[in-house]
Image: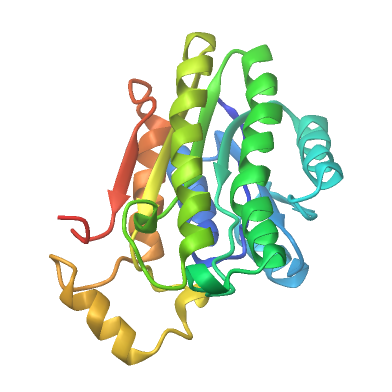
Amino acid sequence: MKDGIAVVTGATGGIGRAVALLIHERSRARLRLALHCRGNRIAAEELSRRIPGSFVVSGDLADSEGRQALLDTVVEQGAPTVLVNSAGVDKPYEPGLLIREESFDRIMAVNLKAPLFLMKLFGKAMTGSGGGSIVNVTSVLARQALTGAAAYRASKAALEALTKQFAYELGRSGVRVNAVAPGFVETPLTADVSEKIRADIRSRTALGRFATPEAVAEAVWQFIENESINGAVLPIDGGMNL
């Protein structure tokens, strides 16, 4: 693990927040945190106060200017050596025959286009500074059908393919690219899921329970720390795909 700056997108979300806190704890201040948020700057500032030396960068990563601004701000502070693409959206829920183009475009822009071009931008920066680690957050739904999740599934399946592609292309430059694929995780993003659906998901999960954001963060940290892992996609789903 190289010293430098660890960038966490979507740092105010349940998974992003847990990842940022764990990176700070485990790296013992060797990695300085750049906390990205799209709109909830107050929550990001509160998180920053818990992580000494961290700083907040706000912006829309679906936009090229927002992505470039994130890179420029980070580079002003030091060399980026870790990027965790945690920002994402899963709504609206639209069955295949009801998908609207505006819904598809937004989901793809946030879940696929943004991490793709962030891997490009930060991959170049890491290559120039001797290497680093990129971790993408995908989903169990990349490999499992769920009514209403067609566009979301497509975005996450494509991100897994890009994870392997960038791992292949950047590996010789010392930049490793991996992904975690959570199942149902108790976060604000899933807070409005009905108990009926929750019970159904538990019944199809080998462990019979949901993951925590901290469990996902532990897997992210393993990818950051273990310099022999590259191109892997690790399910954190309690056995939903068995």
